[in-house]
Image (cartoon, rainbow, N blue to C red):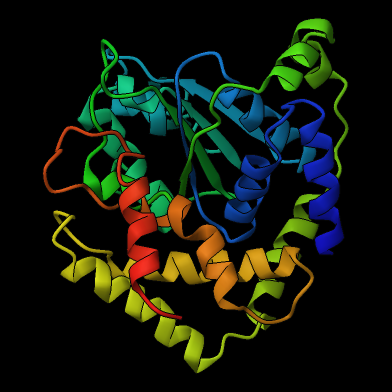
Length: 306
């Protein structure tokens, strides 16, 4: 079943060229059941990547453009009085989907950003005192612009901690950029993109991750990394237990895509930066971006023996 994930990766790489590593990381995040945050400058393919993933995985897709005047009701939905029924009827918002693209999430106010907290963590939404479950599988793929750009609101730590992974696409290399310039328009290619995997197959693959063996020694390594981050003087706060769990689950997914039924330290190291960097705030640069801790996380990894 994990072969289908490789098929999805190959298909998406035809749309988002030259970004095989980031595509693999994105699929690891979704396979592990997490939410994905993509931070980069406008125009490098963040939205295109989210579209291509949703179509290739055969998932219901909604896009919500976050702006400064967006309200929480615009995200989760609103109740409107119906004269015929003589009562209020709830109209679901775009959050009721399988893949929600929260485009430029940091252009909305913190109040609107927080409307996603329950949906991301509990896979449910509470409105007017009624709790409504979200469909399965459920993913939030959010994009954000660098926080130094005009009109952005920095995501709070509680929100960042709910994203399993954060990555950056970066500018394409010369070969990839030439392919973009000379090739077909990416939006046109998206329209002809086929489904490479069914939602039921994705759910089965997620369930199969529980069979990926994790040894006690590997658990010791994950705990050592978490403990080192909490004792490291470079970070304002250390890794939360949620971060350690996310690191372990992402390592399982990475091992599965490598064709192994057990996790090795190299799997943990492969996912460490995208899982952890956005959660750890450098002590001396409180206004840094979500990816500002990347170099410090690499130093942390080198300091903890396997």
